[in-house]
Length: 147
Image 1 (cartoon, rainbow, N blue to C red):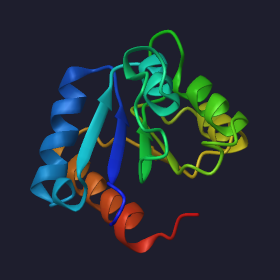
Image 2 (image 1 turned 180 degrees about the horizontal axis):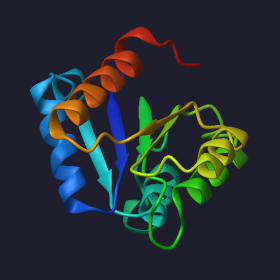
Image 3 (image 1 turned 180 degrees about the vertical axis):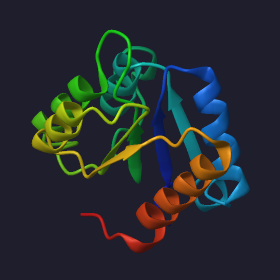
């Protein structure tokens, strides 16, 4: 039996979540996975991945195909989440794509230093945003080989 396939979307802006889900549905990305899990902040993402808090008891052997992680999150930032993921052997190889409205050079450099697999600046218009989601989804789900 195949393991369930998931994407973890970590985004605090509900409008951005709606746009991302709309784009993933439009391009068939949602059809490629069993579930898209949405975490509204860094702590919820970490709780989900490590089976803590409201996710206690979750089968943590089921890991997302990739994490689409906003950089600018309240409390624990995206970079803070990434740092925790890379420090834990259970998630050190989990593909993490930083997806941010910011293209601040310092964030890009810090993201790669912390082990991001990719850093993508969110396009501002929906068509470009939708295309970016399509390319990201298809690449990480179908073309890339993960450990």
